[in-house]
Image (cartoon, rainbow, N blue to C red; front, side, top):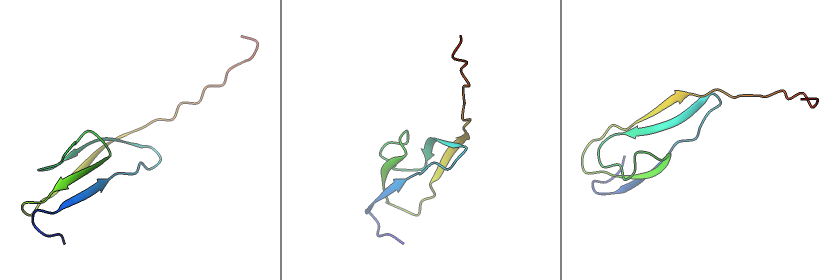
Amino acid sequence: TYDKGQEVDLQFESEYGWRFVQWEGHNIQDSTVPETKIKLDADTTVVVVCEEAKELVFDVDEDQ
């Protein structure tokens, strides 16, 4: 529970296989970065949008 008018830190930490896309909600300072702030002026729901991330591994043959 937070007081009205308070700024709250938002932070998303990636889990294996997921990549941050954006925050969705009202009064988010920068919805395009995983660490930002939100100013609360009413009851608010915040959603973090992620997408599946793939890890690419290249096996390079040294003869090529």
